[in-house]
Length: 410
Image 1: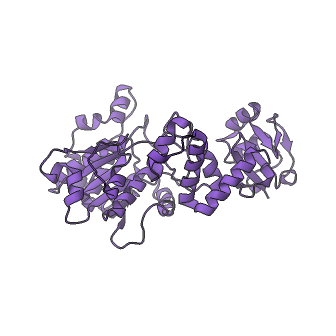
Image 2 (image 1 turned 135 degrees about the horizontal axis):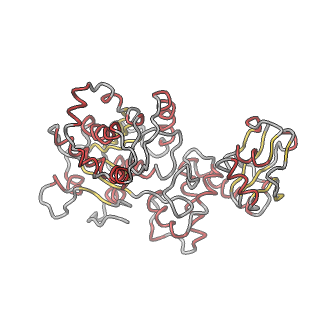
Image 3 (image 1 turned 60 degrees about the horizontal axis):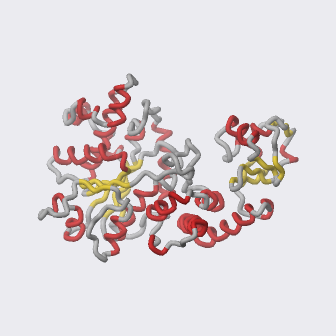
């Protein structure tokens, strides 16, 4: 996974290049630093401006989203300037990358509400305190002021053929699915962000290469030095099969309570452990435990500690052990679910579907019928079991599988 680069013994370069999939353009043998990021990092006379754009299309960030944010921190630690762009304007279009259909356009109010949560979620990762190490920008600063003539000028920098070379657009076009004109604006506007902040390097997942390359082209068009692109892997989810996604339920959210975060990370498949360590921690890979179970516990403890502190992570570990041993009521850190969110009388499948333990009522039915649901340690097999009110449930622990719990409270 790691890009082969001569980074010698410089720890700053080691963290910058750790886990990187691709740097472009990058010519290690080039004499000029123009096409060689390694030379720029070693010889630059000023801090480089390293851009990362985040579109607030949802309220919650997961650990997969944190990978480029962590890389941004590596650049900060090496003395460079992190330019974090909150895409409050581009989020209203929605990145079409990897989408089989047009994304729902968000209102300005929805985007604003989502954006308010983002900075707090990345605060444990980035250096917010050292002067000159972080710029936080909102791309509505420059995009909302573009007039029609400027938008036409942007559109004139790319052809329809170039846009259709983008994998998602090409697939949808070939399949006869609609591709709307406003979607063509997304890569151009995201690329214009690079012009506005004069970025030297842009970070993104491997699915962002097209968008980052557009930024390079636009910088060149406006007479600026083109940025480098640094691509990072897309993290597979806890199911070990598909990209981490909240909609698939295979994610670990940055806002999750310590026990939930620890419990999810503790069951990461053995095949993904090394990738998770490489991308989510700074622990040396050569000194990881040889026992896979010990690796899982160390990973869960390390990542949970990053967001909640070491004491909370250690408590979560102890609570997880208690829960696995079957004494769910003894763990004090089980996340709570308010029964005020349920309309009584309520059937078990409806109650379960209202909690974060399942994605909805249909999923709840499947879990109950599959024997995965317990209430206060007792297996529940009837999805239609009806509860007249919250009194019989208050204080009890509802469980799905071995490691997903909520305590029911009034």
